[in-house]
Length: 314
Image (cartoon, rainbow, N blue to C red; front, side, top):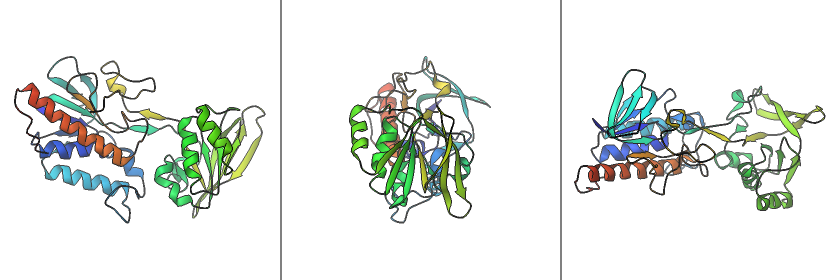
């Protein structure tokens, strides 16, 4: 019988592991098939507190891992394939066995929805980005394009105007899907223009300097064109990594796990933290904060379950 099983090793999962281990809960952390998650493919994080010169996503993952293990968290190279949350103890099955546990913290993250066009994957970090907050600073006085037409795309485009000299929003329809207020702000911003009825078919790049353009296709006329750009920001949605939790806990309409302000799901003893339950901020630092909260709530749940007082050792 375990006290805490944490599924996922991004900033949320490993911060939860640090807090749970410091509370002497001896957490088990299932690393999954991609330890560290999305943060490990970020070349440099300049907005994570405590690193004035920035830190690579992989190095941040390694630091969090070492810190969690220092306090007694056990990282296991296994992938959760199914769960049973219908009764206590909760059960998490992996490919090689299963764990019975009093609490579970889900921190499996989400993946940005990709265009899946030539030149996209190989130029991530070289002009292709899925996070304006993370990378906008590097495009000061440069021209960039934003792909998407929803709230996130328009919000990120507006954010990019703080740095870029020009922001072109590329959308496959002839009008935005974003809210009216955001649309008005974008239309009134002199740095933003729109490319309607178009999709990106290829990301163009130089091996040395990175992205230098995108190839487009008009969905109505099928006419092809090229836009020169220094960067492409893609905001066409995120895919939460929640397949094994379907029908086990509540989700919202976008597929994000529903939690209250204390990281609790609708199932007692099951908590969620990070991108898997955050469809707004999706930042390493906010994920870490959510992971800490989830671990603290797990400790409280165990104390109440065992009829003991909450020691608050974290």
